[in-house]
Amino acid sequence: MTLDELERYDADAVEYCGDRAVVVGGSVAGLLAARVLADGFDEVLVLERDEVPDEPVQRDGVPQATQIHALLEAGRATIEDCCPGYCESLLAAGGVLLDGARDLRFYDQGGYLADGPRRMPFYAATRPLFEDVLREHVTAGRSVTVQDRTRVTDFLLDDDGDAVVGVERREGTGDAERVPADVVVDATGRASRTPRWLEANGFPAPPVEDVPIDVGYATVAVERPPGGRKTMLAMASAPRTRGEAVFPVEGDRWLVNVHGVAGDHPPADLDGVREFAASLPTDAAATTLSEHEIRGDVHAYRFPSSRRRYYERLDTVPEGLLVVGDALASFNPIYGQGMSVAALEALALHRALAADGTTGLPERFFENAAPVVDHAWEMAVGADAPFAPGNAPVPGRVAAFGRYFDHVMRAAQDDGHLREALMRVIAMQDSPTALVRPRVLRRVAAAEVRNARARRSTTGSALRRLASALGSRFA
Ligand SMILES: Cc1cc2nc3c(=O)[nH]c(=O)nc-3n(C[C@H](O)[C@H](O)[C@H](O)COP(=O)(O)OP(=O)(O)OC[C@H]3O[C@@H](n4cnc5c(N)ncnc54)[C@H](O)[C@@H]3O)c2cc1C
Image (cartoon, rainbow, N blue to C red; front, side, top):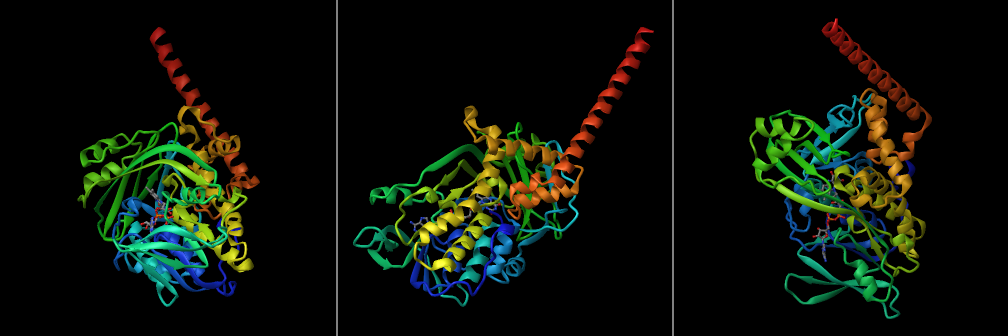
């Protein structure tokens, strides 16, 4: 489900739900869940293992934060609904507002997409800045408290063993302490231990799907002159295993990224990154690296597989236990959807609370969140299908969508309206089915006809040139 299909946030929709909710993990998904829980609970406690200073910093619990992050429209609009003024604060702190219709040079299928007809705002900043500004907004004037350097070591069950009633936590090396709660949200990211905890406590673990992609990233910051807005993206796209991205961020920097899927990883040193950049289809990363001062080290990151945990398929989930963000599903990050999915999941939680408070909440939430995850999952897994190792099976519908997506990309090189349609799907505003609406199909078909004619006429004129060359030689 996408932004346009979901009922938006309504500040008055949630009634009193309980005394306390605990969110485990104070990253983007945890903060967004805390924000919507604050409408129904007297107190929302976010327990975070890392130290969280009052400024944007890289921290151990979010290693991906060294890599490029963009906030797409579904995430932007949803966060702005729940935290009015978020985008203004982001800009004031140096985040960059870009136009997805024109500023972003988007390379795929051998060419750049045409400019789109209408503005499509999106935001670029470092991941620590997105989170820092969000934390400010979520905690300001609300009943949300973030307690850092606090590790959650267990969930607590009631005497009957069928409802989660709190957590056990440890501050630093201190003793374990029990924290009662009406609702506990696991926002601990991809390494979530909830499936193991469920099994250890007599519940079934959710079915898990892992789709290998084996992507390696290397990212380096370079100096950006005042007003420099160069923004480009050339994702790895079959059969090309390599890609690149250049995004402006706060602090007058660009983040320059090179990446490779299916094990074709870039080296993690500057010379290696330059060499890798020289092998890419455009010179955007290479020239940005050579023309501007390097600001800092190369940061490498590896992402083995898109992973989804199907909690919605379980017959029994303990009352009071929810799972959000990367702990629920994490996708090949090339598509930049994680924070937006987390935002739409927060909206799903908001709607689940509004429907009937905490009664039957896990079931309702997982049901609401599943179609949100479906969208990002099918896009990422569909586009990655050609890279599946050993032709691992990808559902036919998903693989077919991936192939069709490539056709639309090609057609969008001459048609800004198709670029807009694509960008709206990528930004999770529209469902992928928007790409098979008659007017989109007509434009794709028209582009295919144009391209076929161009190919025929290129082949025809090449043949004519060859014939005349041959004729003059043998005359
Ligand atoms: C390379 C890369 C690039 C990406 N680019 C984009 C992008 O452009 N746009 C986008 O929207 N998304 C992007 N994403 C995805 C995005 O980073 C995540 O989806 C988003 O941060 C949400 O993650 P999360 O909050 O669920 O988990 P995480 O960010 O992983 O945070 C989990 C938190 O839980 C804490 N924690 C863990 N265990 C415990 C415990 N026991 N007790 C207390 N705390 C605990 C950790 O310290 C951490 O703070 C990218 C991801 C990667 C890997």
